[in-house]
Structure formats: structure tokens, C-alpha cells
Length: 115
Image 1 (cartoon, rainbow, N blue to C red):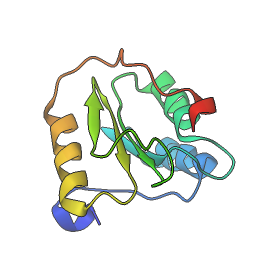
Image 2 (cartoon, helix red, strand yellow):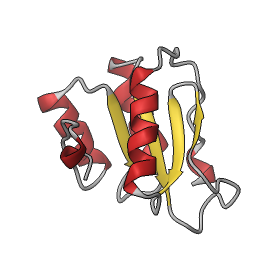
Image 3 (cartoon, rainbow, N blue to C red):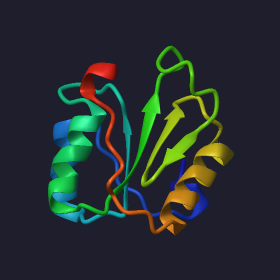
Image 4 (cartoon, one colour):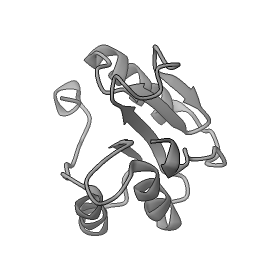
């Protein structure tokens, strides 16, 4: 999806797989992860990768039922929250905004318990 928009991407199907992809192919500028994934929540994955890459920018995707207060993508520092149903144009804009920002990575990651 984002690869067709000119971004270089790598894919994993769960948190442990994402850690393996990061170890093999990283570092990456950005992580896009679901808040809830098999074997590891998105915030936990982001925290583990940020131990090696503190400036990693993160987009968390929520299911339509989660975080209903976020009708449109929201960006805080170097983290963004978007519904998984966000249109490609909206996701592309969020990714481009985060990549062009120079925000420090002091934004708090969501707590795993809020997923």
C-alpha cells in the first residue's frame, strides 16, 4: 500500500516477526503497527525497537471499535494514532508529516492496557 506511494517498506505479521525484520533490515525511520497484534501489543513493540532506535517515529493503527474519540488521525510529537480504516491518502499524509518533522522522541507511547 505505502510501497505504491514511493515509500520503502518491510512487512511482518506479528510483534516478534517485526523485531526480527528490524534486526535484519533496520534501522527504519518509522514503525507502523496495530495497537493489538498476536504475541505483542504495538506499544510494547515500539518500546523494544526504541531501545536501539530512540528517534523512531511510530504510527499506531486502531480498529474502528478502539479509541472512538479519534475520528481522524492525530499526531503528538513523533507518534500518531490512526484508525486502521483510514483511507490511503490520510495514512500517506500522516506518514509524510511524521517523516518531515524533527520532533524529539519524548512523546509517551500508549500504555498496552489501553489497547
